[in-house]
Length: 455
Ligand SMILES: Cc1ncc(COP(=O)(O)O)c(C=O)c1O
Image (cartoon, rainbow, N blue to C red; front, side, top):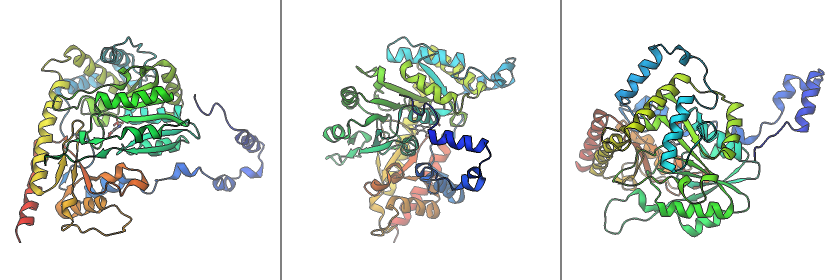
């Protein structure tokens, strides 16, 4: 299953010519060797570079990029201080390459309990530099030239280039919205896969499907029925599932986060990915993990070993202590995993109200800390330019940050190139923000509302 078992014959010959001092290896000749186009695609047009810069230049309130602006829980900060200033000076040195032992042990205990199976910390868990590296390792480990990978739109934008960099072909399927009849606000649950369309995407060439539940950017939490549909197709077509569950603890309104690896026939074909950044509100620490069967993780370990090799020891130690604490408080009222979604749900509801006031139509998310809002009523503020290459939502988000000081991300950023104009009248807000930040956003929106209503 692992690709690139060794160098190609051409590469071998070039190397030999080099060491023999042949002229074909002059630096000029080297520079003119073609670089695979897929490795250059998009380098000049990354949405994050553009929108992060715009937010830094113009925004008073930044609800664009997804990170909390509030501190992590006290118990974690205390562990952090202990790890860095305490007696354990070996925390400043390398640890086990595939994961600091205390961290893989507690992750195996916790996910073993959640998945209802015994997990071996050494072979069923691997720590990564954030979930981002876990994703990269998965695509490098499993996707070969000619393989297809199904991606559900809208999607966390790095999936597409990562699949392509591995030599694979992304195959997209959209979640299709259906407005509720009763005039209620739409929910992320109203965005659904069409079962026949999904089935049509699976073929002989399908190697994997990427699932992201709860989903960034929509906040959709896939129901058990929806996951069973995906699982049945994976089993039928012998397809792997790369399950990005970084927002697993951020689920609202009593909804259940179902782990696809726990469904029938799925453990053996699923790699579940998590993030301490999202779990403990510490995105800057970049600690993530993969959980899955050894037959899959052995390939991920090989990619990790030959690229990153090792993750920051002290950060892993602190995350391990955080999970230990949560394991002991599991399901209790003082558990961070119980308290955090409650607080976040209030923030969600607050932002929903602020957006409704100005005339946007929020899609109420069932999970994550993102909220997508429909801006199609704003064509009088920001007129549409028919046949423009730039999607409407992108122009709207730029106008909003420059004229109102409020930063958000256009939803089209989460669609592949040819589909960017299919859902181009939505923008994404992040509500993992302090009370003061949400209040400042509300002030901007209230003022905007007044301007709209005053002739
Ligand atoms: C869906 C999704 N997956 C993965 C990541 C990356 O997580 P990490 O910061 O742990 O690398 C993010 C970060 O925003 C995300 O939204």
